[in-house]
Length: 447
Image 1 (cartoon, one colour):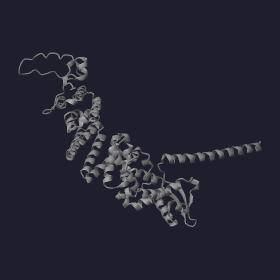
Image 2 (cartoon, rainbow, N blue to C red):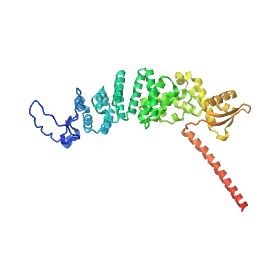
Image 3 (cartoon, rainbow, N blue to C red):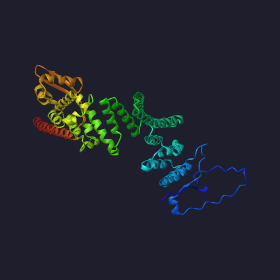
Image 4 (cartoon, rainbow, N blue to C red):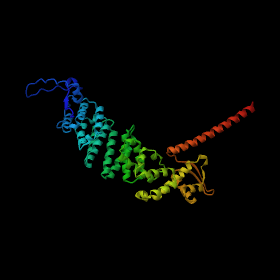
């Protein structure tokens, strides 16, 4: 059913008073008949509009624009009518929510309709709504502009207009827009310009207080794209994990989650200085690998997290074809072996109670599949990376570890820690009971 066209309210129902009309110089004034009151049924379907604000010289007013759009897009007439009614009643929050709902509909994203709606309607009152929502609307519009140069120019224009208006609380909207400008530049191949925006955005984010999650997510996501382009695996991994901390995994599209899960998993394996994988293994995004052609990545991450060299060798043999199809893994085969071996050492030390961390080198050699000389080199590497602290006694052929770097634990590792704590509590209770019995005997002797 076609929606009702826009119509004006009688003056008595207007939320604001219009200035008195100036008499026409072309003839005598005529009395205007009162508009008939619509029926309740018609009122539910029609948009009741009050007097229009004066249009900009040479520009169509927002209400005229909506009327024209209603005629061109009859299937959108009811929604457009509601937008017009909220605009005339100056219900900016409700209007913002309605715009969000409209942009979520495929019908409102046909062709250049988002751009038309922004230029002909949203732009008029953008400074009156939440500025971050305005920035988000602008980014949504830019994504539906086919020409990358035009999309970039559009975002630059929105940001320039915000700066000119010098409105309060515009820092976060401008940062949000800046990050999407950086993303557009990255996609256009202008990495140099994007680098400056990414670095400036990260510094600005650190200086802001009470930052909206969408702004933080934008900064970290664009940073991850830059590091991916530069093949900086560790920086990409950290930026992506920060991005995932500010978004809901359920809200991400399925065709976006799987490539992201693959990329961040590979970065975790290849990233320099990354020896703990529990944070990624515990994140919901890793579940999208299950049942996919990349399920082997989840197995590999679990193997690295536990430092299981036997399982690592078995996985390499089992998935040799897919592993050889990943050039980055083939090029870094030696580094991967070193990383899983260091993880094996860290797990072996962490599994021991602090009072039992004087370990024979032969025990480490048996678990890490290394010679004693290889174990000494491995320990020196771990000490240099500040993953452990301690001393090596070459005469006694043992190492004493006084500290191990903290790490994120998986659910299974937390359960193991609980069992150790239960054992410690049992020992404390036993000592407490012994001391209590001995103190009773001492008290009787004194008496």
